[in-house]
Length: 138
Image (cartoon, rainbow, N blue to C red; front, side, top):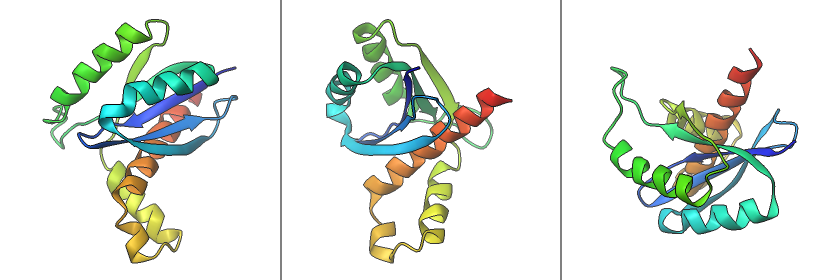
């Protein structure tokens, strides 16, 4: 089997998570500056088989997509153009930052580590992917 990659897209930096090859467990991979995202994914896809890309879908509480979607759509178009063989899916990302902070607290990370926005983005991507993987099982 191949991996599933998930991203928590941000204007400055993007958190990235990957599944194991059995597509059961999500693991944080890294956070990259968003302007380097396509190149990073290209290098990763050249080394690892990737089945699909899951992109966090920014929704507001009223279920409408948020302002950040206007930044995500051009990225998705560029990704599809560069990697037409890899399907792209969206997954609701509401509350992932809150869950990431809670996870960091429960893990006992110090305040300085919890303020690391790159780590929050990576954990958010991991939560997006794990939620996606679990939804496919049921």
